[in-house]
Length: 185
Image: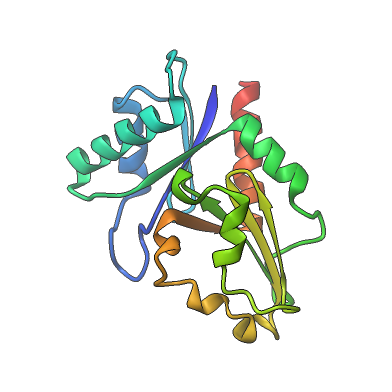
C-alpha cells in the first residue's frame, strides 16, 4: 500500500529542523520502502507491505517513535493512503490554486476532529472564501485580497489547530502525483 506521512510543524521558523535525506533514511530503517520526500515541510511518500490492523495509527506511532529516536524530536505524523488521497483530489475543485490571486489550502485532520461538525469551529467569516469538508480534510480557498479579513488567522493558536496539518493545494497535488508514481513502480 502507498502512503504519505505528513509531519506537523517541522522546518518552520527555524524550529524542529529535520534533514530530508536523514528523514528518508529513518523511514527506510523503520521498514518503509520506495521512500520519497517532497520539499522541506515534511511530506514523505512510502510503501508499506505489512498487514496491519489499524495501519494509519500503527504507522504514525512507528514513524513518530523512529523520528524521536533519530532526531530527538516529538513530531506528530498524520498518515493517508493513496485511496484516501484520490477521494480528496476528486473533491478538490480543479480551478483552485495557490498563487498571487488566491490562497488555497488543504487542512489535513487528525481523527480527534475529523467530522463535518469541525466546520462549526472554523473562524471563517461568512461570505469570505470557501471551505469544504471531505473525510480527513478541509479544503479552503480565498482570494489574496480577502485573505486578511477571512478570519482564518484566528485558527492558528486555537485548540483545533493542533489537530491539523496544512499543505497548499499545489503541494497536495504534487504529493498525490508522487503517490501515483510510487504505485506504478
